[in-house]
Amino acid sequence: MDRKTGKIKFFDKGKNWGFIINDEDSSEVYFHGNQVSPDSGPLADGSAVEFVIGEHKGRTQAQNVVAERSGGAEDDSKPLAFHGPKGSHLGQWAFIPMQDFTAASGNDYKSVLPKLAEMTLDDESDWSFLQHEGEDNFGILHSYLTYTFVRLWNEGKLAFAEDQKGKWAAFNTGLVDTLYKPIYALFSENPYGNSPYKFVAFCVPGIDFHGKRLIGLFDPLPERAEYFSDPRDVFLDSTKSVFPQHDHIIEDGIRRGRFPIDFLRRNKPFEFEWQDPSAMTSDDLTCFLGNLADAVKSDDQCYRGIIARVDDAVRIAIERVKWNFKTAIPQYYPKFDLMSLLLPLGLVKDDVVDLALVVQRQSNGTYSGNTIIPLSWAYKNARLVCRPDSDWLTNKVKPSEDEVQ
Image 1 (cartoon, rainbow, N blue to C red):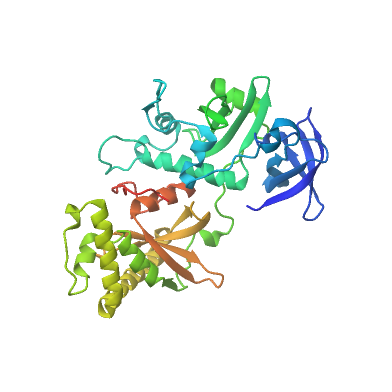
Image 2 (cartoon, rainbow, N blue to C red):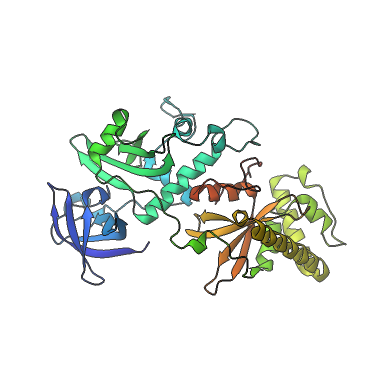
């Protein structure tokens, strides 16, 4: 969401609410104190602020409010600026161990993910790839929590509060317990390290010590992430055409190793010398795939053959959508902060799904097939919106060694 600028009209510290005058149209926008960022300066009348326009219970309100700091040593203070990939943002905002580790101080920390998995309505096995080799690390849940935070930050839905014990923050995980009650993540001010907050607990409102603390600190409670407002974002209109972006799908897909090795071996240019990728180092494989992509691009007959196979797989996918609309699965793509749909592509065999095609609805109703991604990436992205109810996209796939985004 676009950040707005304005000035504080007034702020009632006792009741913990006030109004902002929006610079854009001079309208007055209500805000609650729990939507003030921990990095905000003092909320004095006339203070310049930045904020995000949001909504709560049908009422427009300002969220993620940040007032400029002024005076003294705080002149150089700025709101938290994330750096690096979005997958690292939660870790920059809060100390929250999502794997077991021993710190340099010698302190042992346990991952918070098993406890969260145990609380949720979903079975614990739903949060890991069942083909994972080695230690079960709740990889799907790790991705879910990480990118749900990114979405909530973008929507201005983190909640902040302060009492005699210090500053607090919380967000709605979007998950529910076995009684369908929402699960929240609660944080306290972090006096150590680089992150402003540290993880306290996952809790259900009013239940146990932390759940009671949650409702005592935040009113209203923070809202869950929203990913779509238009039903067309979650259903594919099978009467409209899908136009695969062949140049990107094929060239980039080969260079990044997205295509099945058997498919590449069967569809390589006739004169290209094939080598066994399984025996290659990472650098050698990158070089090999780059050379293969260049060779395919230079061989018109080979290029057309791959296009034909991709188009045929897309045609079959659309037929599957006509038979079962749930075949097209909505996903949230954190890298670009947008919604799209996933279609199954069977390239080696028609009845075995190898990859997911990411399709984006255009303004005229048609669809652009932008890229292909591994099934594990697709599952993680789709799980942010909801658990896929699908016969082709499940957690029974081998996770990719690459990062999701």
